[in-house]
Image 1 (cartoon, rainbow, N blue to C red):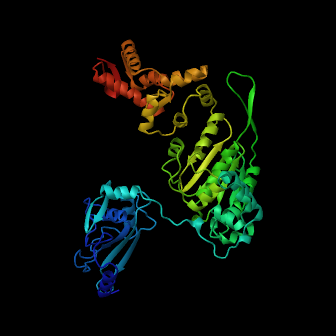
Image 2: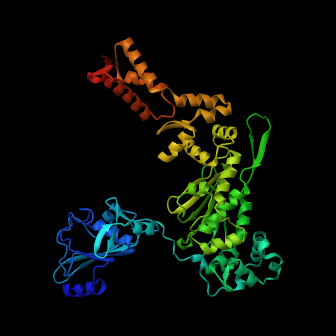
Image 3: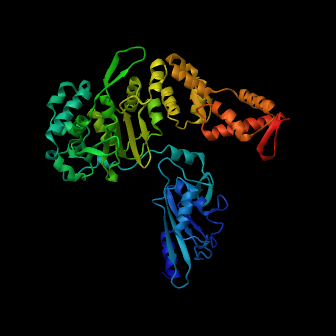
Length: 554
C-alpha cells in the first residue's frame, strides 16, 4: 500500500477513538512498550482486553490519524514484541492476540495494528499489577463495577452437544441403548411421571429426557444413544480408550469403546480388574476383605469425563488402569469450578457446565449427579477405606483424576482409623501435609487452630493430638523426631560446647546440632537453623566470630 492507500484503509476500519479503538503515535518504542503505567502499550492492551477486545494502532497521530510511522523500534519486531506484551500482561489471551504490520511502499513508514481479544472467562487482564479499562477515550484503572462484571460473568459459549444434527434420524439411535435409557429414566423420574412412562413413544421419551429437541436428533443424543455406525455424524474422536499398563508403565492390553456411551461405560466397567484387597484393622487379627474400587468411584469420574469433555478439541477420553492398583481418568477441558476443594467442601452444585445440554440429559438418565455430591462421595468412600484421597491434576488443559485401590501409607491409614471424628475437610488438608504438598497461609492457620498440626511453615508435622490415639510407638517416635526441641535447647547446647572446648569451627557446630534437628526439615533448612542460632547468640552478646568462621564465647 502507498501512504494514501493505508490512510484510507485505517480511516475505513478504525475511523475514531472509542472504548474499542486507540491511536498512538509512539515514534520511539524504547519507553513506550513497558513504560509509564497508564500511558504505555501494555496498559492500553489491558484496557482494551477488559472492554471485550479492540484495536491499538501504533504509528499514527492521535487526533488526525495521519501516518507518522514507527521510527525507532529499539530492537522490537512484530514477533518479539508480542512475546514481551504477553509476558507483561497477566491473563492476556495470547492465542487470539494478533499484530499486523503495514509498510508504505512509497514513504517506507511502518504502522502496527494490534488486534486484542477480549479477556478470558472471569479473568481481568493486568499490566503493572493493575487492571485497566477505557471510559470514552480515557484510560483509567478498572472500576469496581467493571471488575465485578468480569469476575461474575456467565458462560455464553456455544454448547457443542446441543446442536441438532440435520441428517440424523431416529433410526440412527441404538435400540438397546434407548431401552437402557428408558430404564434409567424410570429410576430417576418415576415419582414424577408414574405409569405414563409406559405409554410414551420413543420420540416423546427422547424429548422428555432432553436428548432431542422437538423430535430432532442432537449431538448429545448420538453421544449417549447413537449406533456405532452413526459416529460419522460426530467425528471418530467421540470414544473412550481403556488401557491396562504394567507397573513399569508398559502397555499390556487396550480397547476402544465407541457410541452409544450409555452402553460403553458398562462394557468398560467390566474390563477393569476390581480384585479383592485384604488388610488388617488395628486391634484385630481378622482381615477386612473388600474390592479395590467402589463401583461409584469408577462410574462417577468416567461419566464426569463424558459430561465435561471439551469435544471441540477432537480428543478421546482415556481410562488407564495400572497393575499396581490405581486408575487414571482423563478428559480435555479445564475444571470449571474454582477448585476441587471448593466442590468437595462446599458440597454444592456447580454453577457452570461446559456441555449443559448433555449434562441435563445424563442427569435424567441417572448417569451423573448435579447436586454437587458426586466428587464428595468419592472422597468419602476413599476415606472410609483409609485409602488415599483422589488426586486431581488440572494441568495442560486436562482434568486427570487418580483413584488408588489400596493403602499406600499405613501410618496415615492408622491415624484415620483412630480418629473417626476428623472432618473430611481436615483430612483433605492433612492429606496435603502428609504428601508434602503446598498449603496456603489460611489452611495453615486453620490446621493450627484445630490443633491438628505442629511446627512452622516449611516444617509442619502432624500433632500429638491425632498421633496419640493410634497407640502406635513408631508414629510416636516419628512425632518426637519431627517435634525436636525448642530453640533455647539448641542455643544452650552451643554455649555448653564452646564453654568446654573454647572455640569451634562452623562445621563442628553443624555436626553437633544438625543430627538433633527435626526430621521434617531439609538439609538446607537445618543449616539455616544453625546459622540463626549463632546469629541470635551473637546479637545477645554471648558469642563472637573470629577469622575463618571460628566461634568462641565472649
